[in-house]
Image (cartoon, rainbow, N blue to C red; front, top):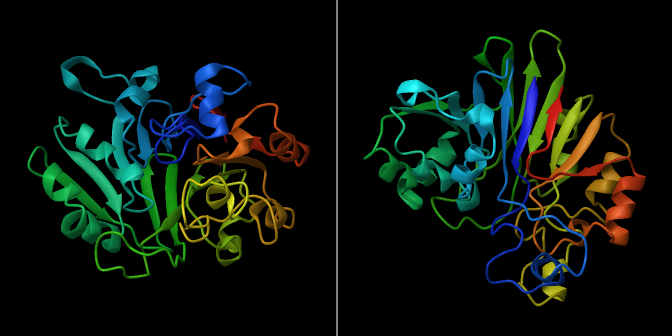
Length: 296
């Protein structure tokens, strides 16, 4: 199986249009080494011909154009087979509206996510006015065949984040995906949003590649920078560093290659020369960039 990181940043991208934090400033003025990133999404394929999107970011058009494997074929045929959603957040779903020219769109989502997209943000109801949507219910724990040689099993990701849209039910609001190459048996896990890593440890164990929530370095990062009044955990994200952080918890797990995705513009690991970036590298883990490809 092949994975392509289409976008590695959290909502707003890097730099974010209205942010002057040290990272965003460095991208604009070039005073420190760093690389711009678009908003979080990954493509996966078992054969490099048929591709599946994990979330549809607001930057999806530019991400498709930057990846020739996703370019259209004669007659508007497309190698994009379906979109799998981890949640109903705008930075993971607004791109659906940019795919409205599709002849039809296969969409994998939990009942809770579908309900939010219909009754809360209304993204799905709007999309259905432009193209047929084939909704495939995502049921945590069920094995689902995507294509010859590729399957997934979703798992529930508990969250206490306040729901901005919809009824705010807890089960199914956020899921992760464990993707399996059915020929080799090797697996990859996509988990761009997780509040408590200990609650999903069993789903990460022994995966060959983990694409993990790297939103913030510390829990109070955005509060200290004056960018928000909520901590990382308040916003549904486990911090990388500190007690209970993902770096600490991953040390006890058997995981192959770990790539941090969904990186907020405030996170100092986005600066190539930062001590935080070095700390991640010293643990044998990586900070994902747009365009990174991984064969699992």
